[in-house]
Image (cartoon, rainbow, N blue to C red; front, side):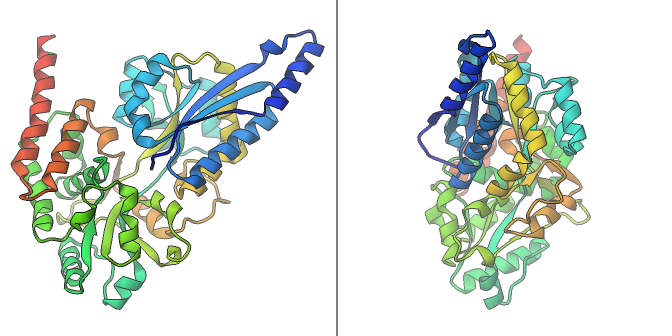
Length: 424
C-alpha cells in the first residue's frame, strides 16, 4: 500500500483563471473562485492514476473551483491523520470505516455528511450497509468509496501440479500445508513489518474459533486478552509457526515484498486482501487464485473481513460547497467504478457495468456468503490496543512464538486504559 513521496498538484490552473476572468466579466472578483483541498492515500500506480483522472474530470467540469490534492503513502497517512486534521486545511480526506472513524467523529475532527448527499447516495444505489456503517450518533460521517475481501492467494498451476485444491476446513488446510512443505514449497508467508498483515491472522483465527460477538467484545476492550479463548487463537497460530510453515525471510518485510515469493513458487499461500490483484504482473495474473479462510469450529457461521474505505469531511475544512459538489460528482459520474477497477476492489454502488475483478467470483463469493462482516483489527479495535497488538505479534512471529508475551503486552495496555478511565 506504500512508500512514495507526498505530491501536491494544482489542477487546471488555466481553466480556473479562465473561470475567474469570466466571473470578473460578470462583476465578480477572480479571487471569489472556490478552492478545494483533497488528501488521499496512494497505494499503487493504477490507484494514483485513477484519482488523478477523476480529479481532472471534476476540474474540467467545474472550472470555477481550484483543486489542490495531496497523495500520501498509507502508513505515513495513518500515523499523521489526527494531527493533520487538527492543523491542516483539507476539505476532504481519505479514511477508514470502523472505530477509527468513530474516534475522529467523537473527537470533533469531522463534520457529518450533508443530508442531501445522504439522500443522493441512496438514490444512486449505494449499498445501505456501507452508508449505515458510517453512521455515528445518528449522523453519517463517511462517504463510502469501496470495500474488499480477505482470503488466501495462491497459484492455480502449483496446486494443480501437486494435486491440491483450496481447503475448506482446518484439517484440509493442515494437509495442504503438509503437502506443500513435502514438495519443497514453504506453505505460508506474512510480511509483518507494518503490523497489519499479522493482525489479519489474529482476526481470522479469532473469528473462526470464537465467532464475531466475542471478537467485537475483545477489540472494544470489554474482554480480557488473558481469556483462554484468546490463548487458543495464538496457540493455534503458534502451531503453524513451530512447524516451519511460514517463510522466515518474509517476517520482517513490508507486505508488498511478499507476493513475488508466491509468483516464484517459493511460497504456497498468502493471507491477503483482494486489492493485491492491482499489482499482479501480467505473466502470472491469470494463474492467481483466491479462497476463503478455512472453517475451524464446526457449525460456526463464516464471518469475514470486509474493510470499507471512505472520504470524510475534516471539521477545519473551509469550502463546504466545493466539497459537496465533488462528492455529488463521485456519486453521479461513475467515478467510483474507476477507483474500484484500479484497486481491484468493489464499488459501493450497484453497477451492472462494473468489470469483473482479476480474481473473479471467488472474492465476491466470500463476502456474499458471509454471516457477518468486520472491518479489520486496526479499524475495529480501540485505539490504545492497536500498537501493543502489532508489537506483540511481531515478537510472537519470532521463536519461541511466545503466546503469553503477546497476551501480557496487550492486556497490560487494556488494563492501563481501564484504570485511567476509572480515575476520571
